[in-house]
Length: 395
Ligand code: NAD
Ligand code: ZN
Ligand code: ZN
Image (cartoon, rainbow, N blue to C red):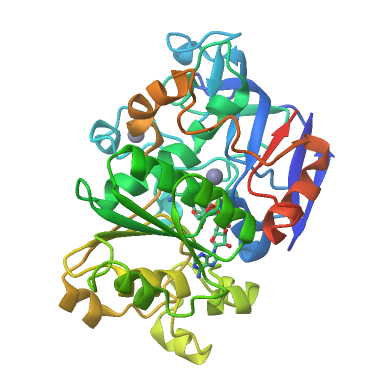
């Protein structure tokens, strides 16, 4: 089969690789029909190369048709079922899964590195499970994971259930926005855009969106977001306070992560990333002149006293001396983490089955490309070229 493989920093290639097979009785094999490129793929593409091997198959936002089912997954799935595959791999049975903390599944967790649940396409960083930017995918824990969706609407209606829709839903729930309250979303990439729409749907009165890419600001503006352009507003927290009666928004979501514009990680790239997972503490941070991660510090500074910061963007290591005095003095809550995808499916599904498509999922992707053109997709998504906001690959 064909699959998108990592070859080096900013170098990915579509190659012929062996077809995946059932290995465990709980496995299934899914023939992929649509599979997205995610901001999380860009971390692998740009800064996390030290942890990858050439040939690693990337991708964690796939959907398709079940081709083959292991005996222990047969009660849940049949060949021919149309499914979306969550990016976190969970068993549904362990202590964590019983508490719906699926991203911490103890059956699939990556013990060697003290990490949470295994993830598709996240290389040895998260369990070395080959990814879904491919024609076929072996799905472990298929008795629990895959989400069945009906025939009818196009793939674009459902494919974001694999990651960014439940991720954004969780970010908004974690943000704990009071009814009629306000939220600022830093980063209007695919995750941040859904955060703004879901926040409105769940009752936020004022939704602010911060980015520096004109098309992304424009998309948000069209959906009723009060946008703030980083290129012209230098002191975003100060500006947010000014337009919220001096207090700041009730809640703030960081939907940017470690490659935040202006952050030292973005500048130092692989050099710093190669030292990440847990090994790089404040002294090393100082050595590299790291004092702030732009979006996260802005979020902490902007949120009102007693408010909540929800961090959905991915951070890779202990590179950031957190402003603890400010956090303590303001009495803020901080929530974060990988998405517990299946926890939110029942909340989201009615919106996807609504003919009016209230989250505008079908209009979400700016680019549909054949899998063969995935390298081009990575380039335009990373560099924000050609108005690119989300790429769906078709196989
Ligand atoms: P993306 O890279 O397309 O979006 C990030 C956006 O942030 C871009 O539009 C960029 O212009 C903007 N930005 C950069 N610096 C900024 C700053 N200082 N202030 C405000 N905006 C800034 O990525 P995405 O697909 O939207 O993903 C966003 C983040 O969410 C990534 O870090 C990704 O890894 C993470 N993510 C987390 C989970 C989870 O389970 N927690 C799941 C999916 C994605
Ligand atoms: Zn993703
Ligand atoms: Zn589990």
